[in-house]
Image (cartoon, rainbow, N blue to C red; front, side):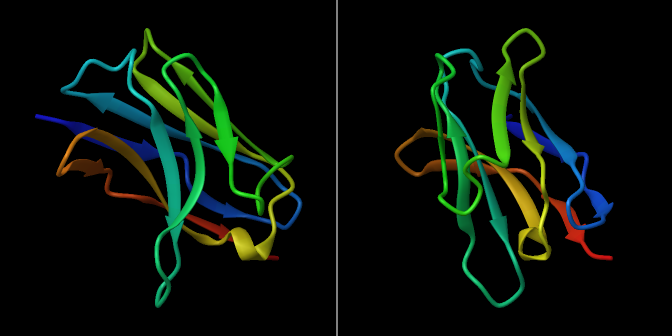
Length: 116
């Protein structure tokens, strides 16, 4: 079955960096776009970044220039390098893949807390 397992979250000071990983399995990874979203309690889940099967990336305006999404097809893993972190980046970060109509998959999420 499809599995997405995020890791790499934690507590970091403002201005610091973290790299999130999402290990995927259960589908043909190489051709699939993948995405990162984030959510804070009481708010809707919001788009952060996406990467296509040929590594074309798009970002939310709020993270452009600070976050970088990448993928390793051999390891079937997608990454989110987060630099210059701000308190507003505090959220649970989720990995996402869409495999067809009504086939949307999410990982369990990893908590990122930016605080001094």
